[in-house]
Image 1 (cartoon, rainbow, N blue to C red):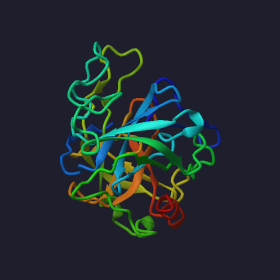
Image 2 (cartoon, rainbow, N blue to C red):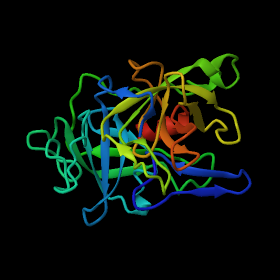
Image 3 (cartoon, rainbow, N blue to C red):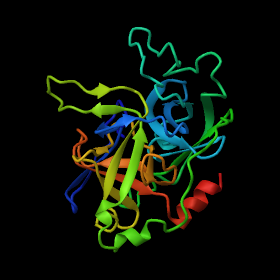
Image 4 (cartoon, one colour):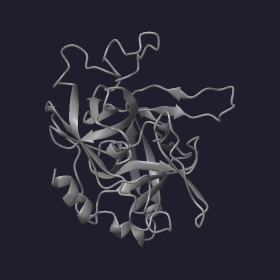
Length: 286
């Protein structure tokens, strides 16, 4: 997901690519009431000012998995807050500057802290450096909560190499993934009369495999297709959100939403794979 207030666009001349971090679920999405451990994450600078928002998955009572470009401490992220309500920012009032039901974007609503909302003053990323080293961008981050959130289930980490067999097997383009997150559901052209649409709700959609072994993915990224046939994709605000292997009831996270190929969220999507031993070791070390 792109960070509001700045455009993260890296032009790789040799590959003729424009890589854009991504923000929300598009296409044929539905409200996500299946994954209560997926939350909307707001990040703040050293002065406590809101700087951008992403999505993330609670994988233990205090550990939220997100993207490295979300937990980008080198670019000013110092603290965070996470809301786990499905409609975490749906009632945001621009005149008030917050959602009166949840407190988004600067507070937890009364009675929700440690239950449906939590703060964080401990952020980590896996060496993310503005998409340097592409395709191995190290685009994984962690948000450690100040207050534990007790839920009946959490996102599950994969075993190392879980997706490897999909890189060569025939017929795997029908492999189903489920993406979940908060953010834009329609991103318009800069001069379009139709504005961006953001529900600030947790939404999910089905996508299918494109490949794991192109010059863009190369074993580090997962490329999926969310266009047509009842499918959906990711856009601004979905960054850091989970990519589940399987249908809507799956809680097995195999990647975190990382980047797209254009600014209006049309086409294929890319997630940074976490089913690699070195990435799992890093996640488990915190």
